[in-house]
Length: 123
Image (cartoon, rainbow, N blue to C red; front, side, top):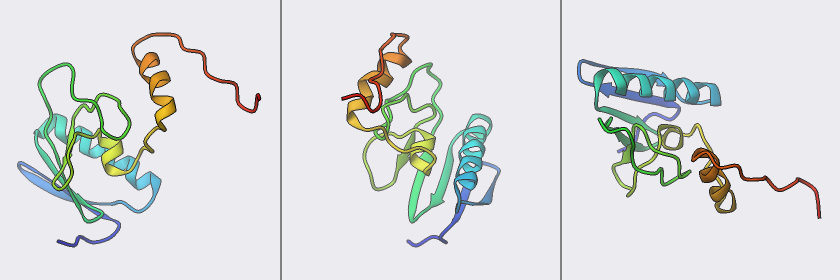
């Protein structure tokens, strides 16, 4: 199924809306609206970029790790044609996945550990 380019269709129990999804600012607004809508209305479906995403907020404190960046996916997004859970920013294009060599540092920082970052430009 093809969807309109640059337009996101967000649907949920009791309604739906169309939002622009062309620029980084549009994507950030989309991420904020989807996160808020999932918190208030529950399950949300997003049709954007020829992709169908389902957001199902969980009731637990944790959540699965995002397949894109490794952060806790709260609420998790699942693509209709891909495995794994994604955080809303990775699913909707608001975040670039981290490179594998940065994952350990990011995870340690998230868990409260102090990890020195390598100096940039030092050989």
